[in-house]
Image 1: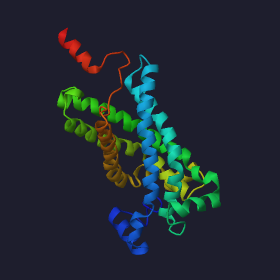
Image 2 (image 1 turned 90 degrees about the vertical axis):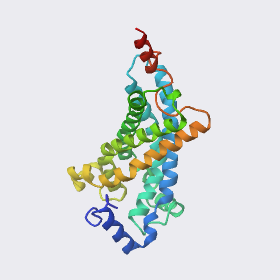
Image 3 (image 1 turned 120 degrees about the horizontal axis):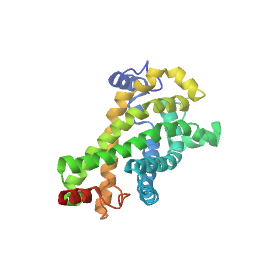
Length: 273
């Protein structure tokens, strides 16, 4: 709502008050199904495929900097994940911003298909990629480097020498940092996506003119940082908790460094030199 009508919904508290007054308390969770199932599908693809691509690229890109592996792995995973997300996002945004459009996914999917055809589900896919690719690349890269920093500089231990609680603590701290930084970079594209899905503009350039260049970076940013940081933290926490419960190590690092030696092994070698 802040992105679609920033004049009417000009702050978090006043926006919530106006929304409840005009559309009732149920408006606060309108579109929850689209978000739940859409981001569930996206998250499963994104996190799972990131691990898959990271292993593949670490084998292929020998001699490359680890950041390059993080970048291409996250980008590859996100491209596929957004294809899964786009239909749910298209319905969710319309349900939230156009109260008379539909009540939820069950009636929203057939109505969208009837009015706009198959293209309607992917109208915002390109802006979605423009929003989520920078977010994903920075999120995963920031997470990986934050994990490395926390183990090396703060805990000064190898991951395998830390308790499960310490490892999950590192996951949460690195997850919050990755979510906050990714949000700042992806905010312009997020505003464009909302504008296109709600037909406030016919194309990207028209959306930019409608929002205004400064507004691309500032509109809804405080709210997104407030919400996205904890959400990304919980995603990482649940993902790594599942990994721990199934006997897998927590996230961070690649199966083997591209030079065949882990950074911790290098520390040992240097200490013996």
